[in-house]
Figure 1 (spheres, rainbow, N blue to C red):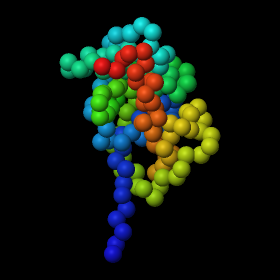
Figure 2: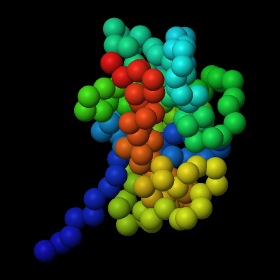
Figure 3: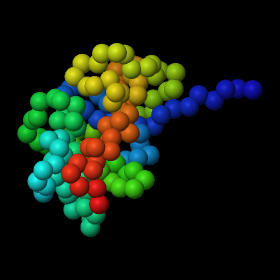
Figure 4: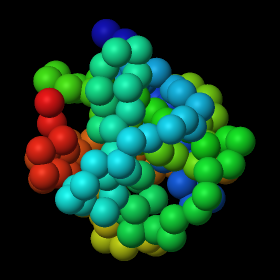
Length: 154
């Protein structure tokens, strides 16, 4: 029997000049930066909410979530809308590039130290050609305290 190698189809995003992968099956949309309504008394990395086609969606600045310095939005800044079981959430990222098939055999466990991102948020590191791409562990990035940040969950 021939063994079938599985690939992880992912959207590649950029934060602080590093590449990260988000599974394509949870991405609902990729939007240009737009006006975000601030919500008082939320966690520092929760930028506020966005009315996206009639759905109020909490928006998280991934740079802030990962303790990276904030930057002003540029033409390449995007909001990645993630569809989860009970709610949608948006991530502000520096850029969103492309969809990439990441072969299972190219993924290694996350090392103990990864630059500026807490290793708890990284599921693994993929070597694709000359690129090193960190696979985000969304359940950790979106831990309950970050989404319900003082009542944003709707």
